[in-house]
Image (tube, rainbow over all chains, first blue to last red; front, side, top):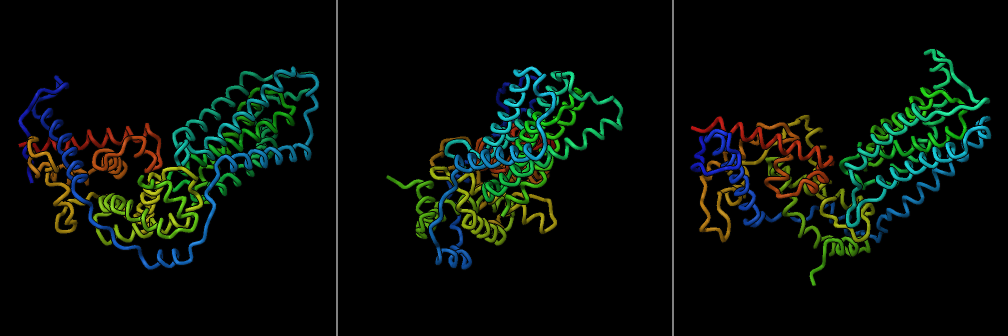
Length: 262
Length: 189
């Protein structure tokens, strides 16, 4: 079927060929016509509510709507308590008294702010909406990964009691393995709890929200590690502690859609 | 004052089945129209519509008080369609243009609009041709063009329904439009 295009008119695209201009104008108007005609015509009446749905409606019972702020508060309180419990099972870093207090405190506050901020983005939708911001979730995860990897690489501090890991791959892996394990363990509860609290909320965009929730858990893991781990090596701080955020975000992107779908 | 969809959802959660029926009457026609454009088959669109509202019912506690449920319900419909395609083993998303299979297409796409008698009238074949050319696009670009150009959704609404970022939706819609333009440009006699 060949289409007849309208006669050419002037267009802002002065360099396009006349045929291309016609195609551009014709296409835009054709799609607009289709949309207007579709809007003007009364949509076909949908089928009646099916038997399965009518059966459900027959036994309809009241249910509470979701409360995003309450869910967010529950997540933050439970996750922070869990991280504190893990820290009690481990130890506070032996060089804590020798390191600059401002550096220690500011770093931990940064981790916790990132944990809270990413959890907020994942759990609390914009006013008047049901689903969280997908774009903000994905951006937030990537920003957290980049930020804490960079901070670790450039802002490492050491004290006489600090552990400085030798720069061999074997030692890097040996020292890194333990921190990665404890960091991911810390991230598991906020990730799992967040997924449960988001059930049914995100029919689409689950991977982006999962990445944000995972990164949030990773930031909480980073805060816990910062209070526990005495290794002052910049590569360790950047690639392992920062790497916890990346690994948790990846895990969240994989797991959250499966848990939150129902 | 007419009751909003948010108020109907609240009544529905309070246990009022008639509120659900009212919500269904309001949203099902447009949702079915959207599913029909994706699924190409009225029977499949009807099944997907019922599945979508079953999921809405099952997940009604996921709605938060005061929120507009429409984007969320459309996203559930979108996801229901994608699950159907994956199960059927087909990745193809098509736009219904065959009048014999979708009678409402005759009324929807004949190039005329109510109250627009004085507007320049375009050849309805161009409209049909443009819609047929949509089938040649990759699924993500096709969905983007359907949502933004045919359904009239904003980029933000379309991104929310498709579960992607606004930037990605803009790119998909632009690439789909450029590809359509090239396809139509080749057909100029």
